[in-house]
Image (cartoon, rainbow over all chains, first blue to last red; front, side):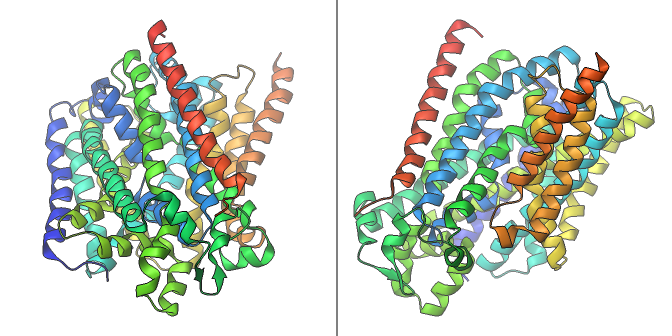
Length: 495
Length: 33
């Protein structure tokens, strides 16, 4: 239990209600497919940049990202920040403009349709659609799960009710106004996340007496018998198993790379460039987007270790040991100690905001793919029926992951955890590199998606814990290798 | 207090990449690209 103060609960309730109310804004333009899915291509640079940032950062960025260096040394925070900055700069500078030009030229309306267009292959399009629908549903399970556990623990409510609190505002928002509403609510939720990050940083840094003073304190403390100086060494503090095997640096680099670089190829981010008002929105967003993501990363990702100075003297060894296994509650616990009522509610609404903003656009991405690349490929429908179907499937895709999030099964939890990085591995070749590489072929694209999906899931289940190498690394390497080799082989044949 | 150079490298790299990204965006924007 972290918070049971009613004012804090009221603030979080207001945040979730506002998200649903914002849905009304996009209602008028959601009567056509392009209006519903792409906001009538009306998103300006600020909406675009904030929406992409808020979609990318789920509750895990605030809780897992914020608390990680309670377990890991400061290197985790440094490299998680670095890969996020590199990822967002690549996304906006290398991918965004090129993708927007392709989409405008070809008139495609989904990521699988783009793949079908790039490689002149219906099979590649169908495989891309299958990967997106399956893996994004699984990824959403982890978003629901993370947000649900935190909400239920912080406010002592039933886990199922917590899941509904996340699902209903997100669902109402997108049913009413589609992408336009999702983007506007993401602007509001993104601002909230940045304010919460700035407040959290300020409260914790003020308490420890500033950055230098905080770091100096680590040469004088120990945590459960582990010297504080290990938090300042890249091969120092980390999960116990990784420390025993001497694999902390490998674990840090593979996990931080997987999380930070995924931005460059996630369809739920890329699809938002389709909704840009014009190329000016992309060129202005190119300046705003990287600043927003970098600011959030700098503020949040290194705070966990300083929470030892805030929390540990108030906790017993048992409680510290629990937080050293699961650091998701480190930031909420520190906030509940340092921050007064009211402001505390504002900060703790950030993980809720982060979950909802990720859920809305991701559901739209799944729905868009299902309607455009599965239904419309097989049946010809009137526009009005397409919209009805899209809204109906938005409801189905809102509840489906929520239902799976109720199942407590180790295999399901593993598959769900692997989904995020696996999506990146599947699309980094066919989409991100395929936009530039003219010699890429449909065989390369299909092989890359199949190899990426299989390696990402199987490595996570069977090899991640023993090797301490996150599944995204081997999945992306093998998928890229397959993409390049098959493309070279089959391109020569075609010529 | 001694912080591992590999940790400092992560933060320094973040700043450098962000500044290059901002400078490049401004340059492209001024050129009208």
